[in-house]
Amino acid sequence: DVKVTQSSRYLVKRTGEKVFLECVQDMDHENMFWYRQDPGLGLRLIYFSYDVKMKEKGDIPEGYSVSREKKERFSLILESASTNQTSMYLCASSLGRAPPFFGQGTRLTVV
Amino acid sequence: GNSVTQMEGPVTLSEEAFLTINCTYTATGYPSLFWYVQYPGEGLQLLLKATKADDKGSNKGFEATYRKETTSFHLEKGSVQVSDSAVYFCALSEGGSYIPTFGRGTSLIVHP
Image (cartoon, rainbow over all chains, first blue to last red; front, side):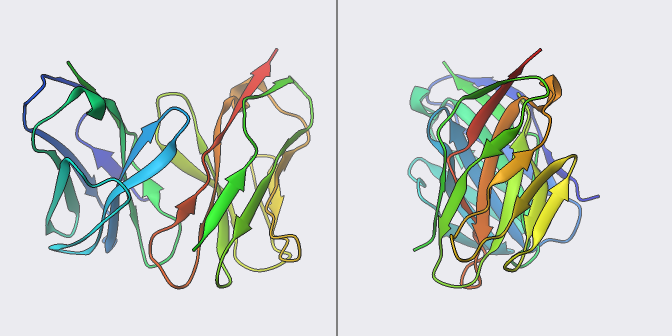
């Protein structure tokens, strides 16, 4: 079974902090994704990576950056956390155009 | 571009009732279609998929048939249980992109 592991289930950070959300997958998938999920808005794509060091902006990249130095790891960075970034963050990975596998999610609260 | 439209929720049912969650899509090519389930506080899990017209995906008593003529992929289950309470997402993947398109999700609440 493919495993996508996010480093934290719950995270509480202060406004202005730099926040790192880590995601690791164990199936050599070339594609990795970061989504944000908010009530009534569904899933919104923040960033997508199709290879090491390669990335594409999604629908809502503002206030976020990403890093993919190794194939199995995709990090989401909040440069200066704000309260409107309080949300559920979901990482996913996929092989080609196969349906992605998701991690368990990180519920981030910015206070 | 591609899009997926799901019925708005929440859908509220009694245990053992029949479930239908509607999903229709727009795609430029010939997509593969998926249903995901998200239990409270968890990530999304792939529930079933279909890759060509008239294919039926099935898993855990859920079924969905790929209907090209009506561009639909409705999710059905004959007898729901309380444990089926979750959010269900319809999605598609189409040849031109590695990025799947998701619907907004439909919340299902099943009462005993």
